[in-house]
Amino acid sequence: MNQETTEEKRGLKPWVKLLIVVAVIGVLLVIANHFGIFDMLKEGTLKDRVLRLDAFFRSMGPWAPAAFIVIWVVACVLLLPGLPIAIVGGLIFGAVWGTVWSTVGANLGAALAFLVGRYAARDMVEGWVQKNPTLRKIDEGVRKQGWRMLMITRLVPIFPFNIQNYVYGLTNISFRTYVAVTLPCMIPGTIAFNFAAGSAREVILSGGQPDAIKKTLIYLGVAAVFFVLLSLIPGWIKKRYAKDGLIEEH
Image (cartoon, rainbow, N blue to C red):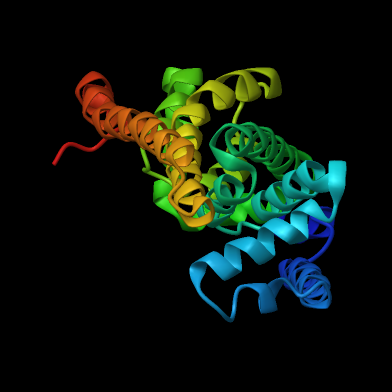
């Protein structure tokens, strides 16, 4: 098949897709500005900002978790950083529910990005992989190790999380396996950041109440355990898989 025929089958040109992405981001920014989200984060102390965000989500009533989950999904699809959203989840919903809603949102977003990469934007993602030898290692790793490569890249920060979601759509890994491995591998980091943010919420909003101090210490302890776990996992994985060429030893 010649190059011209291939280009015809690719559908929308890359610059058109880029314009669509930019337009979508622009619409989301306009909506966020309309609801005053940026103003909530501009002025006042950290406590003032947290209180405004808290009031904003509380005003949604039972729809607040759904709105937060949608934010997560949109962030994954648009390749926006997820860490600030996870922290906001802990600050607004607390350690436990922040963990729950972040887990749901991040995994739904990862799943949707995988499907977009596999079916809707395959040619665009193929372009990323062709231009980036590092991303090609994901495909090579899946062929050699199967689901273990997915586990490695989820637990060790080798590749950006949001780009991974798209690139895995090009591999031969099944959607069911992708979802089943992604969920447990993302939980430790989600717990660590949400419990750290949840402890900050207790400090910011409690006013030094004894019950809040107790919760803060518990949340900090849980976060510390998972941060230590996350710091140990890369070393174990490097020792286990470096010989296969999936992880570079330094």
